[in-house]
Length: 402
Image 1 (cartoon, rainbow, N blue to C red):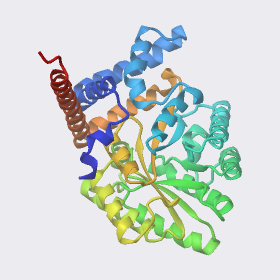
Image 2 (image 1 turned 180 degrees about the vertical axis):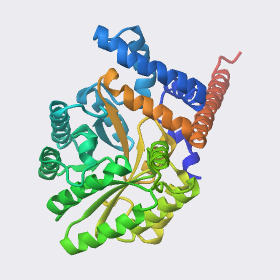
Image 3 (image 1 turned 180 degrees about the horizontal axis):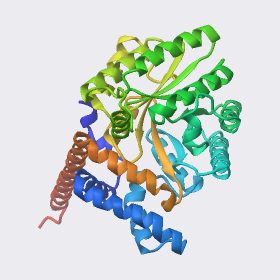
């Protein structure tokens, strides 16, 4: 099977990096240890840096272990080392300053400018075709709950999308909770109508664990045909399942979440197929670590006779995870891209905590990572042992003859 090739999948990782990954995924696979660890990280984030404003010995250890596994670097310059390393194996990247949530207009403006800076930076690099931002990083979540968002949020959206259009960098707009997503969908559609006339620049994120999202894709297609614009979709399963179900139960309304994991998987696959069947309008950025879904996508591309390297099809995984998927797909000449968070340690801690918590809930995926890493470590040991044996055998043959 394609994704079982650990030699290709972990080719960029040194023996040390493999062992570090093995240790981290072992920790993540234990829900009790992860819960305690994330609690300590939250405490550290809120207290230590607040008082001392500097990195300590804990930060140094943390940087070397967890941070380096899941983050690209402290800034654009240091992150480019990772970007270039990935590109050597035909893997693209998109950088994200992973600060989650803002508090006031000043912080929203700062984050808006950081996204614009990322777009301008990416426009000078051939291996950074996308960038991304999170709506709640440039506007209060309470504003998105209203049917019409305020002018400041609209202006920030427009500033970002305009510069992306001018620099020809595709912009991914993250999804949020269902009760604010309608306003975000409306804003993104406005941006698509404005900037996706010729090329697909603006991408909305669609979470397919919501049972209404296939209907949303169909409605969006009707609007695109009527108003003559292209649609960019980042398709994912979703990230807020517990929060969504809890709120729906508390406020006594039907949960927007599919009734089961199987239903979510089926909905996701239907969404992919619908987009691939309408590539004259859609562009697909598919964010998934699910091997079964990816095999279906590969089969669909072959069946529909689509180009692997079509600029309308991108397959994405998170940095530090599912390398066996990423690098084997890249080796088969698909458009593959890694999500690379960057930023100061204390600022990206919320992202890393969420990453750990989400991975704990996806036990099968973590087990698969562990199994493949162990296989590659074992394979390398055998190769080294065989190489040493052959070297000794050669030395004996070339030795002095008496």
